[in-house]
Length: 276
Image (cartoon, rainbow, N blue to C red):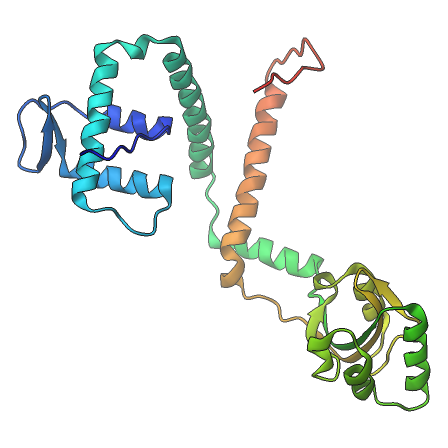
C-alpha cells in the first residue's frame, strides 16, 4: 500500500512539475509512471526537498520514497489532464511565486554586482571597534534576601566585619551561588537584570552595595571582586556577521534608491487588513 506524502509547498510541487517528460526510460531511470520517467536525479532532488520540508532526522527507506514520488507524479498528471493549470487559484499562486522569485533575484543580482571583499569588512570591523569599546566584565558575588529589612541587616553585619562569603552561605536565598560563597562568576552588565547590572557597574573592585538592590528575584547585596575588559572578538569570528550586516545596509540603500527614482502615488493612506 502506498503511504501518502502530499506536500502543500508550492515551490517543491512546481519543481517536480517542471521535470521533463521522457517517454523512453533512461539508464538512470528509477520508475516510469504512465510513460513519464522519474530519474535518479529526480529522486535525489526529491529527497533533499523532503528533508528540508519535514526536517526529519532519518531518511525513509527507498521503497517509501519511490511510492511517494509515484503518488506525486500521478497527482500532477491528473491535474494536467484536468487543466488545473488554468484554474484561477493556480494562476494566482504561480504569479505570487514569480513575483517573490523576481524580488529575490533582484536582490541576489544587486549583491553580486556590489561584492564585499575582506578589505571592506576589515574597515567595518575597525570602525566598530573604535566606536563601540569592548564592555567590561565583573567577577561578582551576591546575597539574595526576601525583604529590604533583611538585606539592610546583612549590610550592617558586613560593616561590622562579617565575611561576605560566610553570610552568603548562611543567609542567601540563591542556594546555587550560596554554596560557593555567593559567587556568580564573571558577568557583564547586559547579561543580568537591569537593576542588578546598574548597581554592579557603579562599584569599585572589592566594594559591595551599601544599599539593597531590588530585582524581580528579591533584594540583593552585591560585591565586585574583580573588573576586567572583555576580549575583543577576532575578525574571522565575526566576519560573517559583518558581511550580513553590510549586505543588509546595501539592500536598504538599493530599495531606497528605487523608491526615490520611482513615481509613487498613494491613493489611500490607511488600508484595512483583510481577514485571513
